[in-house]
Amino acid sequence: MSEPLMSARGIHKSFGDNHVLRGVDLDVRPGQVVALIGPSGSGKTTMLRSLNGLEMPDAGTLAFDGGPEIDFSRPVPAAQRFAARDRSAMVFQHHNLFPHKTVLQNVTEGPVQVRKVPRAEAEARATDLLARVGLAEKRDAYPRELSGGQQQRVGIVRALALQPDLLLFDEPTSALDPELVGEVLHVMKSLADEGWTMVVVTHELQFAREVADEVLFLDGGVVAERGAPAQLFTHPREERTKQFLHRIL
Ligand code: ADP
Image (cartoon, rainbow, N blue to C red; front, side, top):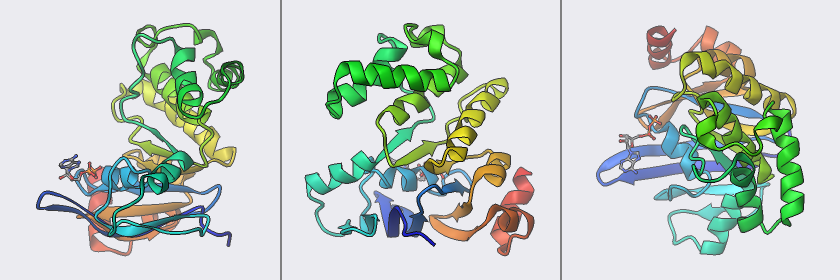
């Protein structure tokens, strides 16, 4: 089996006296899709945000490509923190597009401002990516002129434009009207088929079942069960996984 692209060990995070993550391990290998499922409040989003420095864990380690570990129990140098952040890009529950910028401007903002990609190159890449998600003709539109599903597809393109090694999805369909969910999941499935490495927090268990290579069931800030989807969804070993699936399915 290949080396993990990213390896998180023993991640702990508290908000005040709310101990949200209680020692979570997560490995993602190149090309793998890992789904995080579990009840609301179990720590899925906090774990995802801990993987790219949007949340600073209190303890645990994070490493890329088997390289040096970031140890969160000590002060993390800014350079290390930003290096980790540069490896991944996040797709949020709410697309967070700039309302006064066009689709193209939204997509090129990160590459041009943060990654210092020449504008012409960033625009060419953005145009190509927009075409791949069926939004070529929306290049010059403003976010308010798009449907929720189209906005979220732009959110995905914006993440792709950063050319990350790892895509992080935080419940990307949960704010959408049900009829718009399919188009976004379709794009995510194509990305998985193309070999993108992805960690996905999702309530879409059917999607997790079809697309994920590994599923982690979080409950109370720990991984209560992990496994291949065929095993975890069909023959869960743990009683709390069974109860969760029973409630949801
Ligand atoms: P999930 O994604 O599984 O629903 P979250 O990671 O969003 O769970 O939240 C886990 C717990 O952490 C919840 O009790 C939530 O209220 C708390 N929490 C998350 N983010 C913050 C924050 N920034 N400040 C305080 N509490 C937070």
